[in-house]
Amino acid sequence: MKPELLLVAPLVIAFATGIATFLARRRPRLAGALSVGGAALLLAAALALLAQVVAAGPIATQAANWPAPFGITFVADLLSAIMVATTGVMALVIAVYALAEIPRPLESAGFHTFYQILIGGVCGAFLTGDLFNLYVWFEVNLMASFALLVLGGSREQLDGGIKYVAINLVATAMFLVAVAVLYGLTGTLNMADLHQSVGRVGDVGLLTVVACLFLLGFGIKSAVFPLFFWLPASYHTPPVTVSALFAALLTKVGVYALIRVFTLIFTRDVAFTHTVLLVVAGLTMVTGVLGAVAQMQVRRLLAFHIISQIGYMIMGLALMTPLALAGAIYFMLHNILAKANLFLISGVMRRTAGSFDLGEIGGLWKANPALALLFAVAAFSLAGMPPLSGFWGKLLLIKAGLDAESYAIAAVALTVGLLTLYSMVKIWNEGFWKPHPAGDGGVVTLAAALPGGRVWLLMAPIVVLAGLTVAMGLFAGPVVRVMLTAADQLLNSDAYVAAVFGSGR
Image (cartoon, rainbow, N blue to C red; front, side, top):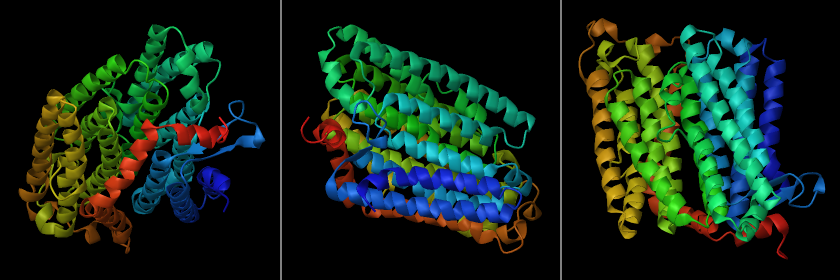
C-alpha cells in the first residue's frame, strides 16, 4: 500500500466498519463480529503505518491534492504512528471484551457503530495536520463518546453524561476562540505552517495568551488540575467496556494535542508556558492520587488515577528535554495498557463478587487466582514496581526531572507513586484477600458467572494487555530507543515540516 494511503486507511476502515455495524444492528452477533473484524483490520493498517514511519520518517498527504497549507493535511510522525497503533490494539481487545459484556439491547441500539466512530475520531485527531480539523475530530469524539456514555439511559448515566458534555462544550468554545485568534495573528492553521509563522508574530505576549487558551481547552480534554472534575463524575457510569475505552484513549487525545502544540507551535515563551505546565502537572498528580486514596468504589478509584497519571505525562512535556518527552510518550503508552486493563478486570470482579464497592466484595484470590495474578501485573505496573512498564516510565521522568534540577516535581512524582501503590494494595486487600462479607457463597468462579463458554471473551483481552505490559518492561531498552527517536522528531521539526511541504520549504 502507498504511504499516502496508509495515512487514511485507519479512518476509512473505522468509519466503514461503523456503517457496516449500523446496517447490521438488528443482528447483534453479526454486528459484534463486524466490529471485531474491523478493529483487526485497523490494527493491521496502523502497524503498517508505524513500520513505514519507522523506516522512512514522517509522511504526509493532502486531501484532493490541494497544496499545504490550503488543503486538508494528514501527517504522521513517530508519535502519531505510535498512538494510532496503540489505538488499534485497544480497539481490538476492547471490542472482543464487549462481545461478552455489552447486553443485546445496547448492541441493537447502536453500541458497535458509536464504538467504531469513536475509534475513527481518535485516529483522525492523531493524524490531522491542521488545528481546525483537530477541532472537527474532537467534535466527532465528543458526539460518539456522549452516545456511548448515555447508551442505556439510566439516571446515573444521564447525570454523568450531562456533566461530561457540558464541560467539554466549554473546552470546545475555548479551543475555537484560541484558533480564531491564532489565525488572526498568523493567517494559517496548518500546524507545520504555524511552526514557521509564529516566529514572525511581533506580539509575543498575545501569543502566550493564545497558548494559555489552548492549555485551557486541551487541559479540560486531558482532565488536568483544576479542570478534571467531569471525569470522576462520569467514567464510572457506563458499561465497563466503555469505561475502559475512555480511560485508554479519550484523555490521551488531549495529552497528545498538548504535546503537539507545545513542541511544534508555542515555543517562543517556554520559560513561562512550560513552567505553568510543570505546576499543573504536579497539582494534577497530587489531587488525582488523593482522590483515588479516598475512594472505596473500584471504578471511581481508577478514574481518579487517570487524573494523577496524566500529571506524569504533562510533567514530561513541561520539562521539554529529549529524555523527558521520551518518558512522557513511554508513560502514556504504558498507562493506556495498564489502566484499560484495570477497568476490564474491575468488570470481572463485579461479575464474580457482585459489586464494584470494595466494602461489599472479597475472596477473589481463592475463587479466581488467575484474575488475581493479572490484577497484580496491571496494578503494580501502574504503581511503578520493577521490572514492569510503569517502573521504567517513572524512572525516565524522574531522571529527567533530576537532570533538569527540577527537584520538587521529581519528589512529587515519587510520592504520588507511593500513594498509587497504597491504593492498589487497598484494592488487593479488600477485593482479593479478605473474605467475602457473604461468605464463600458470595463469590463465584468466572465460568459460573458467565456460562455458555464465553469466559475467554473477557479473559483473553486481559491476558493480552497484561502480556504487553510485561513485555514493555522486559524489553524497555528497545522501546525507549524508539521513544527517544519520537522525542527527537518533536524537538527537531524539520522532518515534519518537510513531509508536509516537501523538502523545498
